[in-house]
Image (cartoon, rainbow, N blue to C red; front, side, top):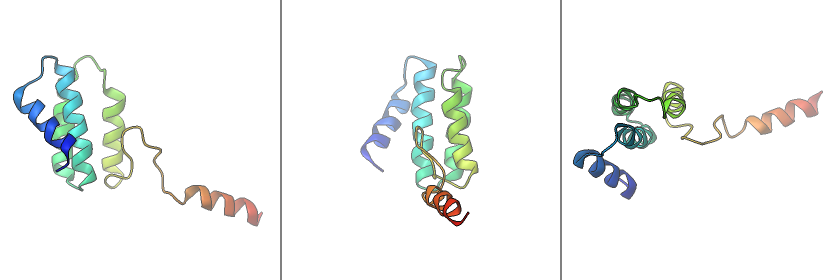
Length: 98
């Protein structure tokens, strides 16, 4: 468990004033869980984050993390570029063959 994950868990345990703050903390914990390949824990945290985000502030971020988890684990992080690392190389190779 890294330092950020420890502090996020403490913040959720102690309680946050705003619902969307708790949703953001749980979303970040879901990203940490998916990075550790704990898919079940990540989906539970995402459901909690979605439930707590009543104003839709984190809707895009929640959707991005859901897609990353469904796509096979922690390939992308929030704000990451995504895709496979060799996709640009493969595109260059296919252009060169033509």
